[in-house]
Length: 380
Image (cartoon, rainbow, N blue to C red):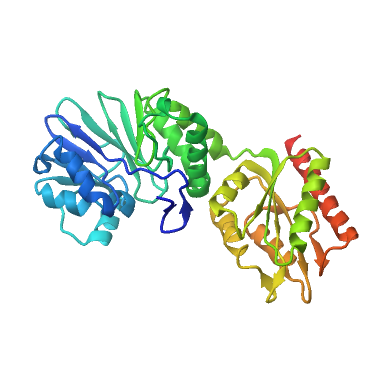
């Protein structure tokens, strides 16, 4: 799998759909899988129990990558109760239009399985209004659905068995591209979760690796990410038609480097948008450039500007640049997008007519130096 949410999110290292079967006096299934993998999931369940013995099915979140297997499960487990959050029932019914036996729960509600209980914690906007967690007492397992996950398919299941650099890169990419807009809620929910003082031996998300070695490490990392404290660095995003805007981007980079501010540069016609956004999440500054086309921007630049608005990054500064031949609106349009995204424009945009002259490139270097000075000022 190389794309997720349709083609909205790149998954270079694949992903996994994690569903959890609990066998006690009662049998519970927590979450399912995306529809195309329902037969495989059912075969895995049959290796352990007859699906008809399942008493409880928990849908922590209704998005179809998690709930797509519900029709197969509920068909083969006709006596099972389907447990959802209060808003989850509306969403599940809206997706599947089935008269399943629902039980809506709220934070603190419990369901006994025999020797252990499932305890539910609502987690609205992590990352949908219906999202919740399920905690298994006795085993200390927090099944957190989309929180604390990654799109990462590895040979092993647990965090102490995989490459830590890959694991944390994918966890950060997941957070930056999906959960950033809800960072304030993330902080509040983590505070609420920690206040419950539940012993946690394992955090089992619905995508990627399971955290069993010091599982709260990812919780504390989420607290750091949710604070959105940027690194002292910049990201340059651009597209170009006849290489003029590319030369301007490189000159801006020279200005940043002259002030010892590191940067990364992305040609957005050929760069992965989610990878670029992950770097923007980390950085203090984002500098965006485009030629003017049809009195506007190159179409390859527009999607990432929309992402900057939608993801609601905090503590960012920015600037704009671009070349033009006739009308030259691109720089003002980019600055408007940055301001709409609550990104403070800290330097006057640079426009170059036709191919940039040496004085235009020097203006770009100066822009880089001005952004670097603003970064240093913000860090001091």
